[in-house]
Image 1 (cartoon, rainbow, N blue to C red):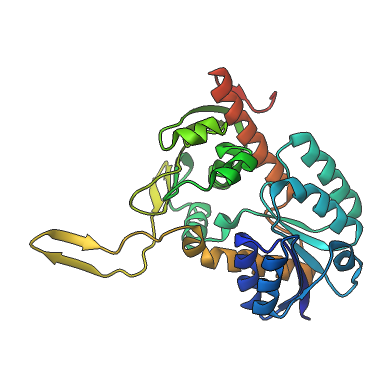
Image 2: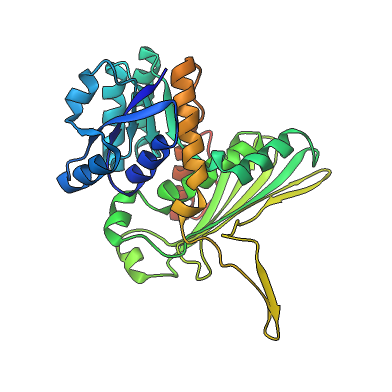
Length: 332
């Protein structure tokens, strides 16, 4: 069975997903929609998918699943449209920037029995997935502390920042999801601090570019998260898990393992440039998991609840910065 897919949104992340679908034998990209005609035409030429309006895509019974890669403010409406049309839905994070809007959307998803997968691609990175497997196997005993580093080589355009919902809801939300995965216990408290250290224009746009968050779970486990919109040495993505019996760490992959030693010292390949290179395999693996869920009628993971819980942590972190105190996640 070949799962026919429609892609809503032909921008940068939409193009990444289109390439991933092309690499999955059990799926076929048959339709694409984007209000920017040039973007839609470019992706149509590259993939052979036809350009169609959203209502036509939803009405096509042969299309089993949709991928939502539009701006965030369209996500919830499109999820609901897909749910009403009986489509399986893959949606980029976040579902929405407003928690109540997310809850309402998930209520409809639940009532229709719609398969919904949220795009937390880092769960599918082979390095982090292997780290998760070893933690689950008890290699380091009981998890006690987690440290997550996520630093971009440079900030996104200001126009993107203005629509993103802020660093906590746009960037660190990935790390909140990974924290939940590795802590193995729900977060009870969030303490965050943030600053504008990279570009004053980011602050003028109402956001921050440098932040840390400390999460404490119900059982007392701790996670520290470090984010920056600037890393002069490349895309820095690392996770360390400390347990009662040792420590596990997943570092940064490089283009090759070649190292040179000469009179100037030891030098290695630089880090990969950005997320499209670093997480290429993760994007393919997550969509492969989505396609498998559609084909086999099995639950999607990460699902809408994972998206909601990560957003709650992002909201708590933003509130912690604004109020200068620790926020109890359970009570808001």
